[in-house]
Length: 96
Length: 197
Image 1 (cartoon, rainbow over the protein chains, first blue to last red):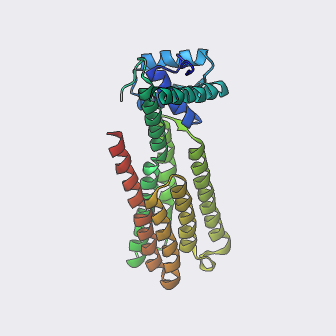
Image 2 (tube, rainbow over the protein chains, first blue to last red):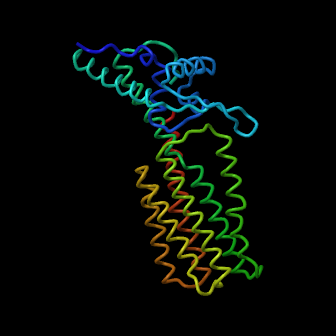
Image 3 (cartoon, each protein chain N blue to C red):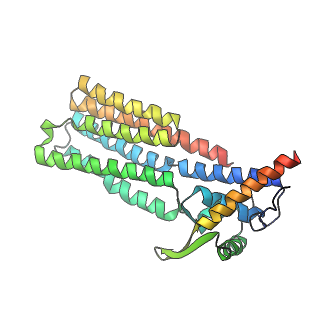
């Protein structure tokens, strides 16, 4: 029997955000938007969901005079991502 | 690839994870702007010095070297400010290496003022340390043109032992930066442009 996939990560944009942050120490909103090609509104909503779940930390700062939002994956988020990938692999193994 | 909030199949999830990780790595590898900026400034400075030296135009021709930091640093800072921000462990490491190279360059310049130019093989020293920076960067990001570029710098440093005149060494310097720095920079730039299409 395979474990249920984390519904918070089993969504295209949230999974994309987490995949980027797993590889990077930190990334700002504009980088995430550029890489995911998501709209600003949608990206903002998904970042909030991940932050509420404590999968990512969000720091609001300034780059010169412009506001800047920097995201980092948390330890909790890394563990959740790793578990998600393990569960995915198991699912595919059983399905294949 | 546009992402939205749809639920994925298991296979789509794996593909998406791989795509995003590769894209991030590719963005992190794209230091081409900095290679091209510092490469072109170095070539312009050394070529400018060569022309001035050859035609005896100005006894203070070494001031051409100052265009490298005077133009390079503000443009680098502006580029970093203008573009989306991402930090990776590898990016931090590479940044640390080039900060060290930059400091070493300033130390060489300080030694010139302290000891005078006659005692120091300046161009050789610059080529040697540039080769180290390019080699380590190339190894970390697994970029073959950069690794080849580092060899060009080291061969250039050795060539300076054979061609001791200042004008010849300025040409070796220009050549080393063109082939060892600018060419890998353009290769990386066009490779990354293709992978993002």
